[in-house]
Amino acid sequence: MNNKKQQNIQSEKTLTEIFKYNAEGGTSEYHVMIHATNPEETYEEQLNAILNVYDNLLVGELKGAVAVFKRYFLSDAANQAVTLLAMTTESSDCALSIVEQPPLDGTKVALWVYLQTDVQTQVLHNGLFEVKHSAYRHLWGGSAFNRAANSEYQTRLLLNDYVMQLMEQNCKLADNCIRTWFFVQNVDVNYAGVVKARNEVFITQNLTEKTHYISSTGIGGRHADPKVLVQMDTYAVLGVAPEQIHFLYAPTHLNPTYEYGVSFERGTYVDYGDRRQVFISGTASINNKGEVMYPGDIRQQTERMWENVETLLKEADCTFEDLGHMIVYLRDIADYAIVRKMHDERFPHTPKVFVHAPVCRPGWLIEMECMGVKACQNKEYAPF
Image (cartoon, rainbow, N blue to C red; front, top):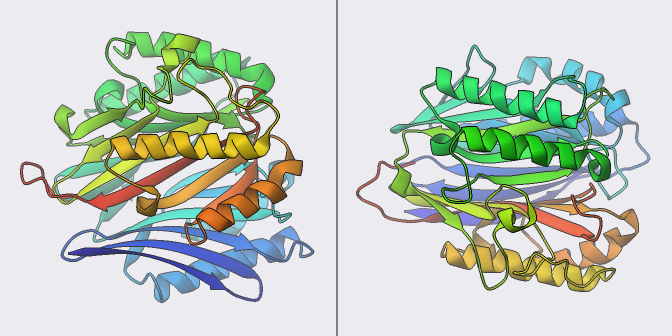
């Protein structure tokens, strides 16, 4: 038995959006978005308000759950990241992602947390965060970075290091990595280097147009250190069989990414004994010829983006109702009011955050990514 529930909790200083997937006798999972709601407060005041709400959730509404991944969205990482790390050191209990992608509601910080129950967790010696339950080891990584000379070299080093991290855990990039995120400073300039390095490393790992790629988001975002041009988050699973992992294509609406020179999957779903998890890559207003749809029209681009995501979800036998969270990226902050209104009307209870982050192609005004879960009985597989 399981049930899904969405709820919004408004307090004096915060708005908290929660998605619950409760699995009776199994691992429950939750997505939480916590937003500051008083833009006039200082960064520390806003951060404290968010942290207080999160602490209260762990002893109240979500008692028994542990965080497996957190991402903080900051408005000014150079001035905020050190304070964040100092204030959260004692509670750095999971893979941690910190990226400058300013919340578009005018506040300085927002938080997405993914939590689970009945799991064993530890930080591995190589920095990955391990989550164990049933027959699987889930490996999360957050905010990997280096200071190599340019975005191509930084990406190449990030991926090569990650391949080695996985090898140490008896994993392979092609077999076990489910999801990556690349945050690129000045994406209009530096994304080409990311693409070149990723394409070339992937070939060495048997990730080609004839095999498969990995679901991913490549988007504008920056580190506190201006020398860091690319940072990477990752998720891999050890213990899954190849037949448990399925890739999403939606050929009526989207084309294979290699047709325009990049190497990622549009989406992936993983079947476990008791559920299906789906990961939708960063998805924009594109057609199945790789062309930008509705240039300059934010409303139509938003609707086409939804249509593309909905088609990918349908291929996984899922709907928007199965989504645990949405992250919506906007190139132009002036589009926020329209986009926020459209999403609030269609998805009033789905946890979501809107951030300023240019998409990898200038013509795309908006992009979204999401993660979902639904009950699924597969007796041949171990439960999640």
